[in-house]
Amino acid sequence: MTSVQTFIKKYGWAYLFILPSLITFALFTLFPVIWSLIISFQDYSIVRGGTWVTPFYENYRISFTMLNGIFVTAIRNTVFYTIFTVTANILFGLILASLIQPLGNRMRTFFRAAYYLPAVTSALIIGLTWAYIYNAQWGFATYLTRALGLPPIRFLSDPDIALPAITLSAVLTLPATAVVLYSAAMGSIPREYYEAAELDGANPIQRWWHVTVPLLKSTTLYLVVLYTIASFEVFERIYIMVPSGVGNSTQTIVTQIYANGFKEFEFGVASAQAFVLFAIIAVLAIFQFRVFRSDVEY
Amino acid sequence: MASKANDSSVFPKSEVIAAAPRRAAINVWAIFAWVVLIITTIIALFPMYWLFANAFTPILATPPLSPILIPAFRLDNFERLLANNKFYINWMINSLVVAFAITAFHVVFDTLAGYAFAKKRFPGRNLFFILILSTLMIPIHVTFIPLYLINRSLGLIDSLWALILPGTAWVFGIFLMRQYIQTLPSELIDAARIDGASEIGVFRHVIFPLSMPAIAALAIFTFVRSWNDFLWPVIALNKPQNYTLTVGVANLQGEFMTDWGIIFSGAALAALPMIVFFLLFQKYFLEGVRMGALKG
Image 1 (tube, helix red, strand yellow):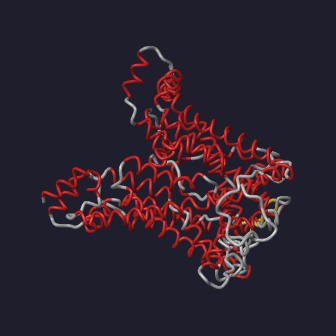
Image 2 (cartoon, chains in turn brown, purple):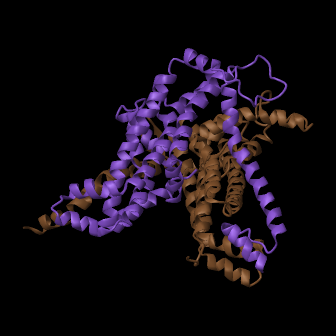
Image 3 (cartoon, chains in turn orange, brown):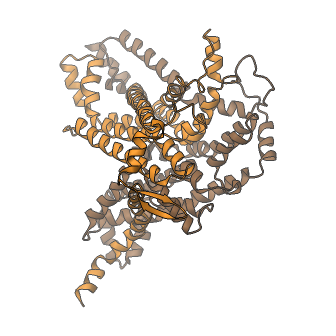
């Protein structure tokens, strides 16, 4: 038997088993990413194909300095949305998981399920529902402001309010994954840690802050990265709540990529903007891993 | 001290955060906790409730004095939805076809790859695994323009294949299956081999059945994810009869601007299958989240 035959006999099945996945990744992820990077340095048209732009970073320059500065505004809006939703998600997740932890098994399962239920619904439909909650005539929020005696608020048509209103709708869509993951992580903290803290005279709040929260660090890191990426990629909620935008006040990075790519068919500019998103996400993820890097194992 | 020992025997779980030296403190804490839990549960469920309450209530010509909070349990809106919108059933079928096809691909491909990465030794194993995992960081939006061009040159734009084929690559599934299969004892595989099972036989009769809990979670998440997907479908599908439900519902808003009943009932009907699905298979959903299968 030749060495090739031995190799195939020994490892052939393993390669065969990963082959379907490798092919789909190569065709539908790696190849598109590389091609997209190339297009981001090109003037690309469906009919003519791509021609290199000069200087090579022209599409990036256009994104940041031209087009009325929409893209820079979009980044700023996305950062605003991300800061509020990620902070709120982590806090809500931590607090709600802590509150359900002392309950019996059945109640704990009930609350986890209740918080999780909206997460199985498409972001698009959640967004659509919020669009009507905010509707100026029929919306629940409009009735609420009236009942509180406030002047009418144009939630989704006032350029100063639309983005905060959309962000609020995301904050109030409670963090299902965070509750479930924190809850599971809390369940695996050894009882002795609390007993030791109790012997040292720590009250329940102190025990929570000095024992529970630090030991959840790796879960927190995972959730911060997860929610930061998801928030930076916000699209559906905005697409459906303010279909034509409120000036530029509700543009985000992905709404810009979508508009430039599939409304204007400026593939070069849209690809450049997609890579800016990629770079931001990569830098943030690395930064978050450094800040949170935890030596605690349990 | 005696009273505390008593407390922890009555409320054994309360130790984790709520154990307090005095009973009065426990009660104040417990009341606060329940108030927060009930209010947040209402906040979490209210939008869905409001959607369904409105979907089941015939719309009025002018806004009522108070918001619609109690549904009228009438089907008028649904009747108008199906009568005025000849494609709604098509959208539902399209969503089902895509979700089932993608789920079937994932169950087979991800379990095969997960098994190889978990139990087999071969040159390049770590390299391939890291290569696949590294795609996690890539925002999917980076791939849309080339995907559009590829599908266009293959003539697949406006066909469900444009959604199904790229949908077969999802790194979470491979990761989930690898993590799970790693926990299965290798002796079972060796024993099956000694009994003369082929490689395919080991996979079909040992790995696959033993991985069922993870496969269930994987299948459920893949199905829900595909059902709820929006951005790529809205790019890849142009003709109304080819839409999936999310794309169709988004377009109802433009088409029936003034007839909210149609929009509400269309959205509610699109959300309903996943809600029922969740209520039936809750355990697998929550277990799957814990295994790290999905963001939400």
